[in-house]
Length: 125
Image (cartoon, rainbow, N blue to C red):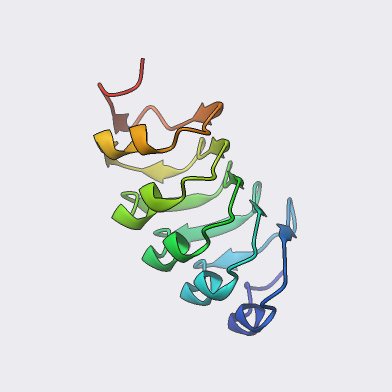
C-alpha cells in the first residue's frame, strides 16, 4: 500500500516501472515526466485515481503504457498524443471520458490499443 513517490522523478535513467497489483493509491505524480528514458509504464490493477498528468508527454521513449483496472478519470492530455514511440496502450477498466483526438493517428507505432467504452471515438477503425 502507498502512493507513487514524487522522488521517482529523480531516477533519470529509469526505463521500466512495473507496479502491477501493488495496492498503490493516489494520483500519478507529474514528476513522471522527468523520466525521459522511460519505455514502459505498467501500473495496472491498483487504486490510482485522477487524471494522467500532461507531463507524460515528456516521456518520448515510452513504448508501453498499461493503466488497466484503476480508478483514473478525466480525458487524455493533449501531450499524450506526442508519445510517438507508443506501440501498446491499455486504459480499460478506468473512468476516463471524452473523445479520442484524431491526433491519435500520429501514433504510427501503435499496434495494441484498448480503451474504455466511455471514450467516444470515431477516429479508430
